[in-house]
Amino acid sequence: ISLNWLKDFVDFDLSPEELAATLTALGLEATVESRSFEFDGVVVGRITGIHPVKGTEHLTSCVVDTGTETLAIVCGAPNVVVGALVPVAVVNATLPGGVKIKPTKIRGQVSQGMICAEDELGLSDDHSGIIILEEQATLGQDFKEYLISSGDTTIDLDLTPNRGDAFSHLGVARDLAAKLGTPIRIPQISIEESATPVEELARVDITAPDGCHRYAARVITGIKVGPTPGWMVQRLEAVGLRSINNVVDASNYVL
Image 1 (cartoon, rainbow, N blue to C red):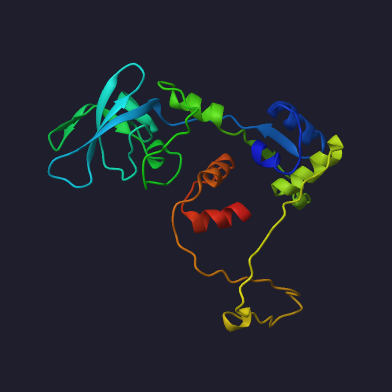
Image 2: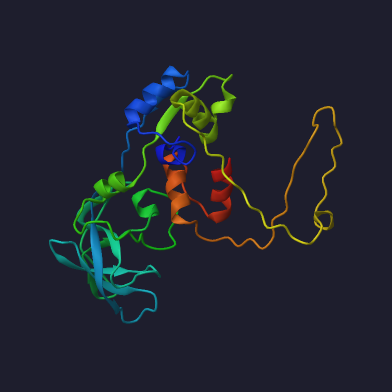
């Protein structure tokens, strides 16, 4: 479970270790998960200039300030913008899979590193564009330190089969709220119903009522597959799920 996600349902002022000890005392064996990354030599940089690369429509040569040096980096991402804070793999950095960054020439342009997308750092499968960081990121900061300081803490639960009620953040929050004597917050859900009767779109027949007393379904129209909001990506990553797209991620988020 995610510590920050849990705080959506119940207020508490416990360290991750204190929370794990409290949950264990409640019968929910808990340990704090240490976070590790498969890259090294990636720092926070700022794009200070963008120039087109001759002979191509999608490549740009970016001027990147890392706080200690100014680099020229060729990038093909569609979302490069002057002023953006980004993760930069400098020369000699290592990425997942043992990839080592070396200076190279692309279409005659010198490239002294890589501006990274999430999949290139093993953070998700998203390769739609480079990672754009929040403004609180510090120029030149080790990107691993940035992720840890701005990220979440994951608590691993080892649950017994009879504790199915604790297989969700809300379920854990109920136990924790009872232990701490604090109120629990139940999310308020607002759904904009369509004027079109659902019977015109779909139908559910229960043909074996002895085995299935009730089946609930909902029709959602107008869905477009696209990138997932950053806050949802962070929450899924905190519980060990990689972002795929908005539709898949929304399903995983609810489940």
